[in-house]
Amino acid sequence: MRLTAFSRLRTVPALRSGSAAFALALAGAFACASPPPPAEAPPASEPPGPMPDAQAESMSDEPAPAEKKKKKFDDMDPGERMQLMKTVVMPTMKKAFQEFDAKEFADFSCATCHGPGAKEGKFDMPTASLPALDKEEIEEHPEMTKFMSEKVVPQMAEILGEEPYDHETGQGEFGCMNCHTEKK
Image (cartoon, rainbow, N blue to C red; front, side, top):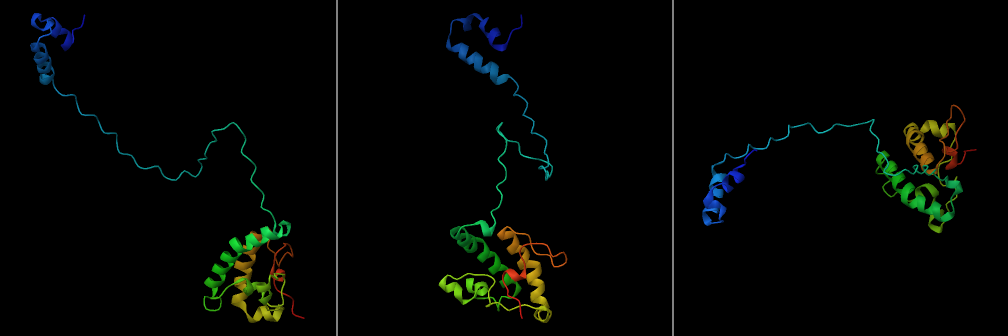
């Protein structure tokens, strides 16, 4: 039988009686014992780096819902169109145009693209209030043409849920002529 410090103390006759000496003996026994070794600190580790292949797992057995397909502008009701214009098109295009030329587009508003009729709620596009386009007009303004074809058309096409028009293939739904008229 293995005796612990406490069980050895119980064998001392003076301590069996529950006297104050028992408390002193017990305290002394533990005071003389060597302290436990300090707990080892866990080894330092590097924080985890990016985990590009990691994917979150669902806590549910239910299949994930299908991603909601973006509604095209032409399929929206007037309220949805106005909401999209106010909350997405205006801030996105204002930023893009002001980054291109802050001075020329300092007062960017609905009328910048839709013309003065926008103040009366007329937002028809294409509009004659924008420069009419032809090959000569495009060649006279190479920086603006590049900005419009590389920045504005792709962004607007994405916002509107359409494919940008590709001049080389003739494919796509949204391009210059969705906003501009053709010079005759």
